[in-house]
Amino acid sequence: MAVDMVIKNGTVVVPNSTLRAHVIIDEGKVKEVTPFDDLPEARETIDASGLHVLPGLIDPHVHFRVPGMEYKEDFTSGSQSAVAGGITTIIDMPNVTPMTKDVEGFNAKMDCAVGKSHCDFAVYAVIVADSKQHIPALADAGVIGYKIFMGSTVGGIEAPSDGEMLDAWNIMRETGLRCGIHAEDNSILFYLTDKLKAEGRMDPLAHLEARPSIAEAEAISRAIMFAEHCGSKLMVYHMAAKEGVYLIRAAKERGVDVMGETGPHYLLCNAQDMITKGLGSMLKMNPPVRESDHGVVLWEGLRDGTIDVIGTDHSPHTAEEKMFDDRFSDIWSAIPGWPGVETNVPLMLNAVNEGQLSLNLYVERQSEGPARAWNMWPRKGNLNVGADGDVTIVDMNKEVTLDQGKLHSKHKISPYHGWKVKGMPVYTIIRGTVVAKDGEVIGDPIGELQRPIV
Image 1: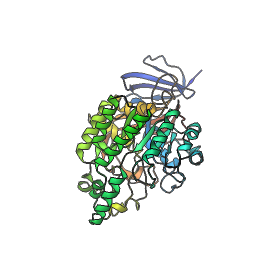
Image 2: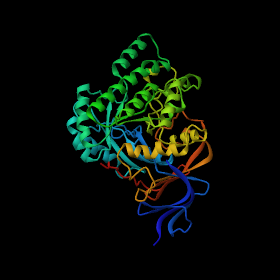
Image 3: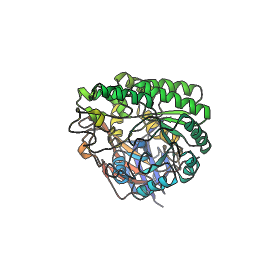
Image 4: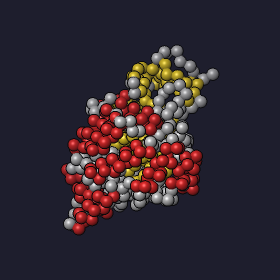
């Protein structure tokens, strides 16, 4: 009997090894990874000679904007961006309308995702002041984890009080699911924003000054104490501040179940790029891209395991919302965020080629790490026998100039436009089906909801 797929002659890269081998996939699952050339017949064979074969890459932090903001993005366009960029599974954020704060909101999200996604997907629920009673039901419905917005950002979701957060973490502990935080302290943000506006500041760097690293560090420190007290699991999303690395490293050393996430923009850009590279409001993000010394420490944290995962915070807006044509006039009026899921893998492969991290470590942070963090392991994040047959095949020698006009997102704007990179995804495979090749999407949506393994 023929198997579904054989990927032959590639260099298979997992966190702890690199070897020439063949990957055999059947009935949607990895059947074998073998160095021996006596291979079964297959309905589809991919010759990966000269290419690197990775377990399917995961982006654990995207905003596909539905329900409620379909004009920015939806699961069709967002998932096309993901698979074109080498991502096989995404986790979608809950700050939509209606919010994913109860089972009704979860079902509204499912109506927007099921049958429309080209990649596999999971969903976070949001914790707000009046939603703690919904935590167990949301776990039963199939959310992968939870999120608390400790600081103001897109959507204007109010942070729960400290007491409400403690209550919520105690309940979340019983579900076995992790909670991530947007870590910024509102009292600092609001005070400094009002102060800078009163001074007439509207330049791009005012956004950074309004959201200093101490605001991020204060929120991280508070969340670590809450999670430690409750014995619950914590993720710190989109880390931008070096102080966060120090806080998480110390917490891990004393046994707290805390994990960190950062994104390519915090590793590869710095605040001065708003001025020196003419990016202005295009580089506006919450938390902000900071000075270069923060990036140095984030890289250190990524390499030593303080930071466990890479997530893009893919957050598309229209050109008008980003003030694309007037990016130096009023930083307060521009919305933070941009499409990132499609450019992430090329940017990080380029960093591998530049020696910032090994390809094995990149696989750990973009595949195994997210799968373990969000209870998808061992179904996702590896090429072990029985895992989903998700594979990202990359060409580490392919050189490309990134072009925002070729993005699959609804709004084709990117601070990385014109960047030259070396290293590109060439095949994206989900459960043994090729869903993208050389940046072009293939076939109909086959994405499935990923429920946590607990």
